Amino acid sequence: MKSALIWDPMVLGYRFSLDHPFNPRRVEMAVSLIEALGLLEAPDVGVVAPRSATDEELLRVHSPEYLAAVKRLGEEGADTRDAWRWGLGTDDTPVFPGMHEATAAVVGGTLRAAEVVMSGEATRAFNVAGGLHHAHRDKASGFCVYDDLAAAIAWIRAEYGGRVMYIDYDAHHGDGVQGIFYDDPNVLTLSIHESGRYLFPGTGFVDELGEGDGYGYSLNLPLDPSTEDDSWIDVYSRLLPEVAESFRPDVIVLQNGCDGHTLDPLTHLRATTRLYEETVRITCEVADRVCGGRVVATGGGGYAIWRVVPRAWTLVWAGLSGQKAPDRIPHAWLDRWQGESPELLPERLRDESGAYPPVPRRAEVEAINLRTLESLRRQAFPLLRGWGMGF
Amino acid sequence: MTRALHTVRPDDPLAHALRLTRAHRVRHLPVVGEDGKLVGIVSDRDIRLAMPSPLTVADPDRVDYLERTPVSAIMTSEVITCSGADPIEDAAKLLYRHRIGALPVTDASGTLQGILSETDLLYAMVQILGGTEPASRLEVALPDRPGELARAVSLVAKHSVNIVSVLVSPVRVQGDKTVIFHLGTIDPREVVGALEAEGFRVGWPSLEEDVRAFLSR
Image (tube, rainbow over all chains, first blue to last red; front, side, top):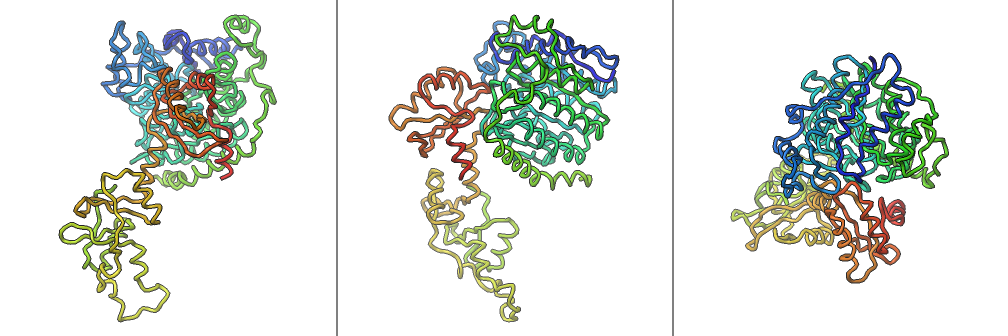
């Protein structure tokens, strides 16, 4: 098996309420589209069920007090008056029954992905339900209770040592993962997102470079809100190879939040499905060169759940598993889901070029993003060269 | 302000003051008498102005000039200071009006307690402007009449969204003031909708005009 899709309906329990935007329906639809397009049939791909994360695995990245609070608040009839102290019980991240068990399953999925990749059972693995990058050591935030990405990175470090490169191109800054490894020189975090000047969580600026021994191992590329595919892919393809070749990771952990799509209601970025194909292609090429192809991937944000998320994550899976996905979406799949969808489902997997009107200030946006990239290089590259010399 | 102070005495040689500014990378040294009272201030620029030019040929008579001259010869005695209880906007105004780089902080008796540098103040401003908790940023155009801010705030409160910070900019855009909310939510759509339904112009990510003004600056 070269590529593993981590999936089992048990992960659908991570659900806050019926009308909450972080709707597990998106994961179910994505997996069913992957299946409908025949992308689970090749002899070298397989489906692996998640497991539940243990307390020990969660405690590597969360405080004991926080873990105890999540368990207690998720019990039937719990007193939730102090939930706000833990970032819970808010409109964003409400308390729900069985919260600990449901989230531990999401974390366990990303741990399984890391296990199959690090043991050599597969080269790439994709936990569609994972990607809870806003959860902090002792605080829930932005739809995220436990941080599955951080738990998987900490598991890799504990079991195998080595260097982990975390790449996050969700439209929101990956603040939880960055914060947990802010002083760790063995974990490099690289987040590309809509600038925190405009969007939640309001962080992820170029000058956040890490601290202590980890100084120079946190990289952030905040994009102008109106960024389209070309500029996004351009800055990513310039930055990634240089960083990866200097850091020389043993494995790449990739968060594939797809809320940077132009149809997403929570952000202002203007990507199309091409961004997901290209980002995964570029990342896998670099992984093949620097770390034996090893990529542990997750989903993440994505709130245009009918028209975008299933298509974006199908393209992510196709790219990771090295398959060419057919463009026409089968009628059986459309019939299965159109009844539930309030919007007309697209019949093609890829957005056609010119499907969305161009941004009038495109040249300006491209110039702003290039200037940000330059600023990141000026601040981070003296440190990057330091790694190359074995400091 | 910084409490870990590097200070000099009026009779310390300039050479000593110069070494302090270099070793600790500070630009201002308060000059303090034996009783701990502030008697002057000396900047690295004052010291450099008192040094011979590196372009002139060394004069044997002046080699130990810096060792022989006391700080009191070049220090500023009329020092602009502030008290620890002053609001930071007052301290900022003092630095700006007098075009100086640091304010010694003294108590009522004139005893030195600390120093507030431009950098300290800039950091305070960064914290005030940026906020420190995860938040979404909204810009709302406010008609310049009583009660408008309260009206906007109460609409936010109705949606039980926590306000992390509020900043009202006196700069007018098309006659309106701009208020910047940092809201503790990843999903401000309902708040945006409620504000717009009540007639407010809302910028998320930004009021278009503000983006323009920022870019053309």
